[in-house]
Image (cartoon, rainbow, N blue to C red; front, side, top):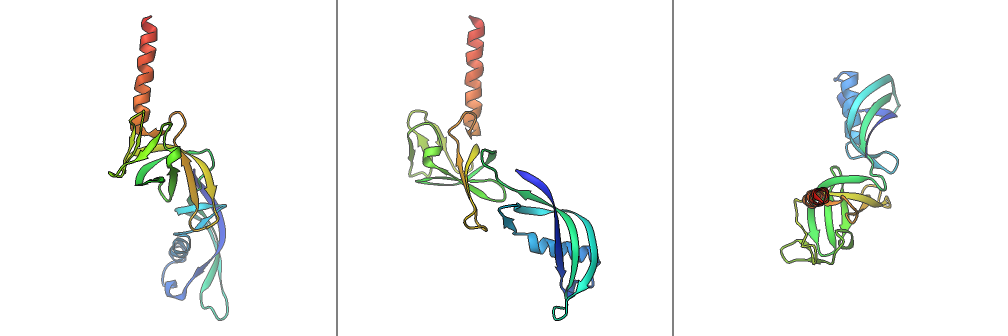
Length: 190
């Protein structure tokens, strides 16, 4: 889920940036500090949307930089259990697939790709034995988050499933909807 969150922090502006306006220098420092920031509470910071308030700067002896108490808003992506996401398959291995969720990747174990016996092919695809459904790199898919781990705070693990109604490759979902419409038409004819 994407959020806009208000953050309060003391922002360090190094002396090399004193030539900039205070707002530009603070914004640059915020972007540098939060460009790759991840935490269990905030999620993954995507960008700074707005600076709300910049307090007076203070100098700390021996540092030379100015510190500004600042309120600002950031856009974050924080995956949540049971959330339905959409992304592209980036890699297929014999144990499952990786799907790009935007700022991070999730993993779908082979047992969670479809309700079928699934095999890994030499061509780098996963195929269902009965359904004949195939997953390829580049396929757009819809999945549900079923596991989150923040053991490594800078590399959270996201486990996904596509074994529920209206989940899977978007082409599969479209085909299923067409079949359902056809059944409804047949029932109406009777």
